[in-house]
Length: 113
Image (tube, rainbow, N blue to C red):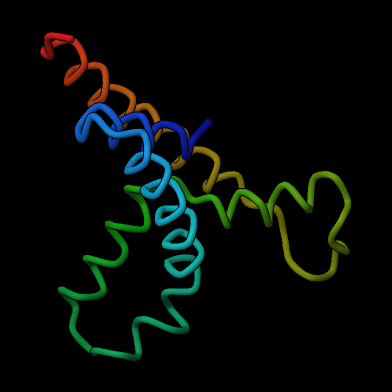
């Protein structure tokens, strides 16, 4: 559902189902990369602006990787001693999905199909 919000926005914006599907794949991959931004991306360039940009991007798009990891804690697929459950990826992802659905609905209502 959360990735669908970005795909719906991309589909309405581009009028292309193919671009919507490719955008969903890119967001899924980007979410995983941004999940490890402190370990992989921050050391690339030591700039506060760069770090804040990556943080903003991380919180703007749905956090699929964080939700998958935390869902594994809920269903018991990961042992309890490997980490702790965090509700925030679910909250941030719901807010970003609502934002992208809102943008898609605004664009859709202004288009003449």
